[in-house]
Image (cartoon, rainbow, N blue to C red):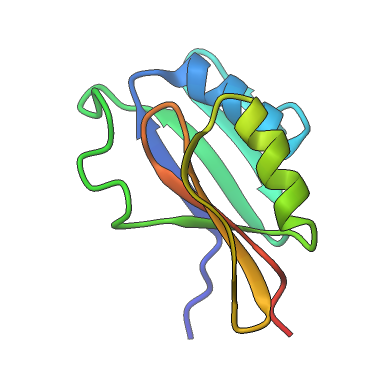
Length: 119
């Protein structure tokens, strides 16, 4: 049995993405390593990080191929807060199966979703 323990996003815009996700997550990085180009946060039971990567320039070519889901009971409120931080709106909050989902994009164009907790 496998256990997913972390997700990493590679970027050439380390400082921009690090600052963006600090605002989205509402806290400074739990781990920051300027020498190795790394920001990392404990988010729930998993770990999320932004890593400097020399071959990841420009916007995401297939931004919907892999999406991060951030769980919150306040999808609409968090959508408005994160949109005000400069996230690109991909899809405004909509109801699906009794829960809410919204899709946004970070400064590199990577998609992420806000979702209500699953029952």
